Amino acid sequence: MNIDGIIDAVDYLENQDKRDYDAYEALPYKFDTCTFNVEDAKRQMIFSCLDCKVGICYSCSISCEHYKHELIEVGYKKEFDCECGSLKNDKDFNCTLFDKKGIDYELENTKGRNFNGEFCFCDGNPLSDGDDKMVQCTLGHSCNEDWFHLGCLNLGKYRLEEDDFDEFICSDCYNTYKSMFDEIFNKYDKMAKLLLIKITTLQPEYELKPALLLKENYSKLFQYILNKEKQSQHSSLETFLNKIVYHDLVNPYKLYEPPKEEFTSIIKVDSTNYIADEDTYSKNETDIMRIAVEEKKLDVEKFNVFKEGLKTFLTGFAKNKDVVKKEDIDYFFKNLKSESVETAVDNNDLSTFSNPESELEELESD
Ligand SMILES: [Zn+2]
Ligand SMILES: [Zn+2]
Ligand SMILES: [Zn+2]
Ligand SMILES: [Zn+2]
Ligand SMILES: [Zn+2]
Image (cartoon, rainbow, N blue to C red; front, side):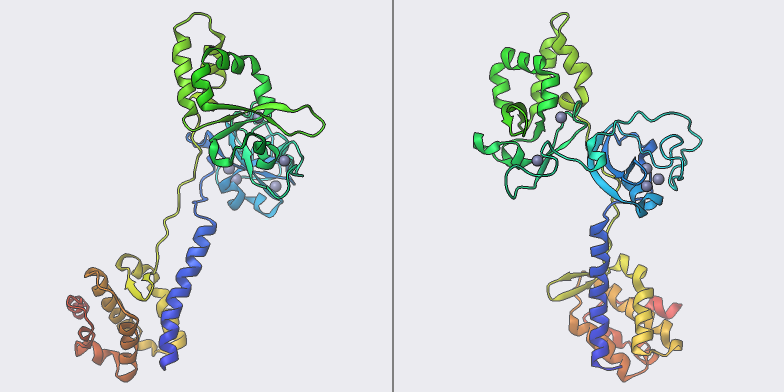
């Protein structure tokens, strides 16, 4: 074992940790549960399989057969049941996470143009140059929660920017309930002006069409109006808010996130120092030891002693929340080089590190 070998071991920990983290960042959510039966998934991220014409949940987009197909993300959709492996929608495949073949009912999903890969009224050619950022219609009853380019919303005309509003209602959805929204603007004009902004969007081959921007706390406004309207009889506005758009505007469904995987680091690094993480260390020790054997050509017979020694060494630091410096790790490996590990352990040499509470007793009693 040489100095290069020592550096290898430290680099290895760092590289492994980074690879683990990159992998974690790419897929932070657990993908072991199909949302078909998940009560909370009222508004969830959906993927469209262009090959099979089915809409599937996040987990199924990774874990089931469709992952091999052409998938596009269609964003959050409300009240959408995962179709992966369902009896009528997806005859050819089975869902590996939740068997739906035995369930004989038609899923009542609406699959709008997003599911064919079409977005916005510009059909994917933003009207203003360079602005590809998109917002989703939060009402979605007429557009199936379509996505629109910010650049296609004509915000510049109103000197508005993305941060000036929370949600967007597209012109089709606005138009569907125009009389209701107009009533709100007339009857509750002062409040409505604070929380709703009427704009006209840019749409080719159409007249300019009115649409709505909703400011932060918009749902409180709708809730307030609903409470007021409940006091009068036969209010169509009450029916609208209480029945038709209740889960869209008054008390919107929360965006469902699958449970997150917890990231466990091999080491905690603060710029120059290495702190061994006691809890995660044991999980990764096999890997470290494999490298030690392969790259350091450690005698396999000494393997376990080496393993215990390093573990004890790092655990002590972690317990005392001491910082393990690179020199300490280097020194540990140097020690291994200069004398047999058994001797190092027997002679209590590990205690030469700034490690008052090493667990040598535990090691000796094994
Ligand atoms: Zn699913
Ligand atoms: Zn497919
Ligand atoms: Zn599936
Ligand atoms: Zn567009
Ligand atoms: Zn819409």
